[in-house]
Image (cartoon, rainbow, N blue to C red; front, side, top):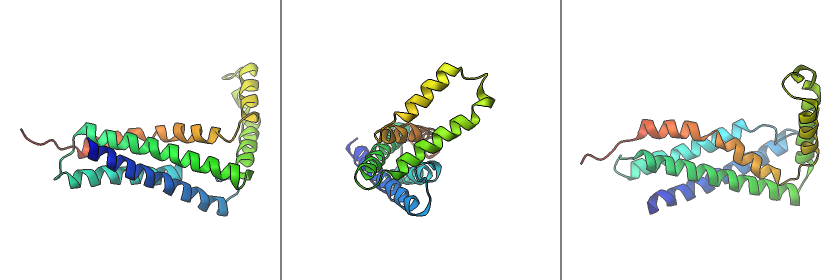
Length: 169
């Protein structure tokens, strides 16, 4: 189990740093680097899946589902937490502009789409959502990263099922 955790830690840290570097690349190229979550999340998933494949290769081709899923879950969680913390530190220390752009674009999206969503969301719920967006702090980036990376668990689980191979007894 120690090897599983070592692989998880290494590839989780690697994926988190790569996500942050991708954020920096977007920071220098587009106005709202926090708006696009799918491209760097895809990179994160690829790194985590490579970690699972690497573990299987180093384990004489055998991989139990629980080993692969543990590597995937821990590495994905660690990558999301590390990248969220690094982005949070960047926003606090270097430049707050991406955060304010992200919040203002989110508010304008909500208000522009409001007439078509009247039957789904009451005025009270809409006002609460708008107030929560306006009162957001930079620490919400960490939770946003954790929630966004939660969806990566499904392809990781499928990958582990496809790769699993149990030692014969």
